[in-house]
Image 1 (cartoon, rainbow, N blue to C red):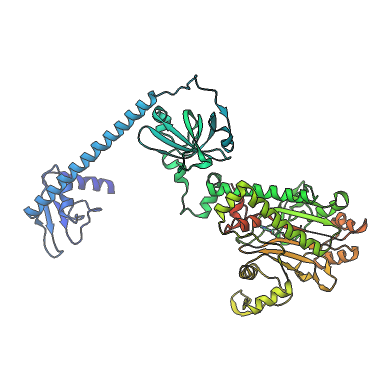
Image 2 (cartoon, rainbow, N blue to C red):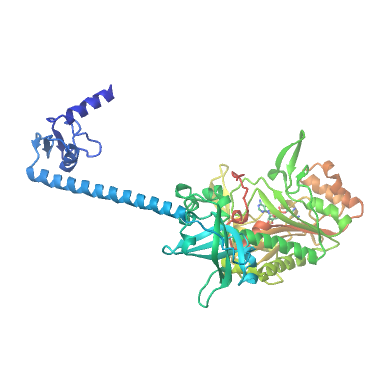
Length: 572
Ligand code: 4AD
């Protein structure tokens, strides 16, 4: 019915005699129809509406006045403007049509340009970009992704090619940049380029100091343009959540791929370090039925009808290897059902853990600082690692041995001496005041960071009270309230390592289970280590992501994972 009314209203307006109404007070150019009940606001709009007909235009300047025929001068002015606008629109339409036709003709023309390899040239050797330097002056063939490209006129095109091993500047000239593929090339397409690698002349720069003078090329897989184009997927203003949804594309970027390359170098450096100290790599199971670091962060799952967990730490298994293999380490994933969204907590992280037999607490501390400094030096001295470090963390200051050693009790004193207080909360969790930290309390992330950042150098924080540490930690002979435990703290990140000497005595371990309310039965294999020839031993776990966040000065550990897992995210 409403539609019928609207149609009738329009018909009556379109009729020769139907006037068009303009109310300068209540009219609306966008929503009005020109009818008396829905007038326009301006004469210009009324003229536009009436163009082609000879409808009379009636205007009122106030709601008190009646409608009067529009003034002749106003009508003339409006008509002129409408005509000019129409002409402009027509011209723009023609120009767009001409552009489209020219583009279509250009593409048709480009389709006729067919490239062929020059058979008189030497056969091209297939290489990876990283091996370019030793192939300078030779004809090579390189495949990769179009990282960037730029045309300069009709006869010159530059492609920066990426193959994961490096970046290569390719120069295409003449016919090579006039093909359909060249004209429609989009970023992230895959191509194979053929040509001779030439050193760059003095004063010019490109990755590797050379460029490929292309003599033939082909597209392997085209990437889309328009809305689907790689460049439309994200930019510097994209939210972290969307960046994580697009992580599979984000890792193609220079920063993310550099971080992942450094991650590989760091893992390799740890392995080389352990190898140099004759510590053997083992690969413990990740599906377990015992806890290591408290029940509250266990992920459970169904294992053939039984409850099992994803491991929090491989420490207990490593301890069982000592009597079989001597000193051991592993680089394995650990899992924590952390219910907090912090910069340094993940649900899944790479855990570098080691266990060393017949050592004392000092040996453990010495091992730790030697390992951190050696691994850091290894990656910093690696040509690629050094370059990445310079790019991502130009202000990096390599720490020196020995690290500052500080007892837990001194840390509590430091916090109190420096006015770092804890919040006092009421039963509903509202802050009602502040108080000093007291001996026996866990030092939370924020004050720990504050202390580490203020001191500004690595700290071996030692001898935590037994009550705030795990069941397996050995007590200090000089004060049995304390444990021979250590956290390595780094500026900007805080704790990167947790370690300790382990209880060697059968009865003492039984007390540890009891204190933590753990049923010792499923731990028989762990307890047996104290029964069948016990030994003084200790070990540690280092969070690889935290080590990387420190080394590369990343804001969060999420930035150094391939596909980070944390509360609320388990994809892609
Ligand atoms: O201090 P943690 O909990 O110690 C252990 O798991 C011991 N069983 C290790 C051992 O002695 N073999 O964890 C050790 C390190 C932490 O210092 C931290 O670097 C990392 O593991 N880590 C985490 N990293 C990211 N996200 C989490 N949720 C982490 N939990 C621990």
